[in-house]
Image 1 (cartoon, rainbow, N blue to C red):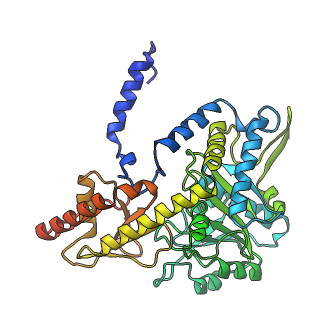
Image 2 (cartoon, helix red, strand yellow):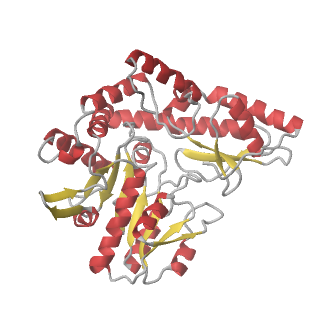
Image 3 (tube, helix red, strand yellow):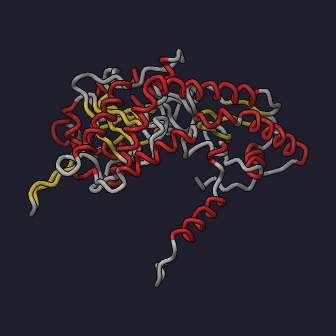
Length: 414
């Protein structure tokens, strides 16, 4: 509620700092999602770079703020360079993965309307593991969505079911790299062949893996082919504010061909002249662009390779330690940074274990498919908490088993 008289900033600031006591301690690695954090050095770079452009508006990048256009183009070129682009490729800087996906769906729809030779009502085919943002986008555009069951052995898009569902209404199919539910990569190579055969738009959701998988591969990690190099891929989304370590509000939508980028644009002739925007926003935060530019340039390839190694090494330490706890088992396969583990002991309910871990100050990610499980999306901050996490997990399992605890967790909450 707006007060009749303002308050001193020192008072408001102190109050806001106290509010943080309500939150989980992300700096100590207590969150398995939502944040991507390394150390105070990178955090201070984020703050300083963002504050330098906290007022500037990305909508005016062409005339009023060419500095933002220069930095935005640099970040886009960085994404293109690590994700298999050619000289004909192009990209758009967006506010996050949901906006990148929304614009990809819009581009596919416009392509279908202007020569895609598809019948209405338009339809998108997805695996059940694909991000909910595709349904959000389709709902805004009156496009139908059909989610198909994943394969039970590896949790990837079931290509046989995909082929059976294809018809003249389908304008888009989607692959995840990796999906957030189980951490596996869909077979983008096979999806590309199907997309080419049936003349449909293939989008790769690499919002999680886009700024991690290329560097993990450089480090020798086995990573499936998933990027713009794969024949049949028309667009790809990658979040800079995840493993790119930019501040929130930074994602990329990349196109194999710059011709396809025009399908995502908006332009209108109105009283003032021509209004146009590449993204779905009007006013855009200049700070998000500046921060993404600063962090990608400070880290460089060596920095990202170092952070990728920290992440994948931490995955190895955690999964090995969890498998050593009697009654628990890591669900395989997983292929990069996301994994889940389940109970294999009928006397240990996994959601009760999650409850116990929550009581110890850990925010716990819970998943229901392919099995009731605890999920982790690992990033470098978790390198410091492996031993503590595993000790608390072992104690939680022992308590649940000994006391026969059951959970009353509401699975409808996210």
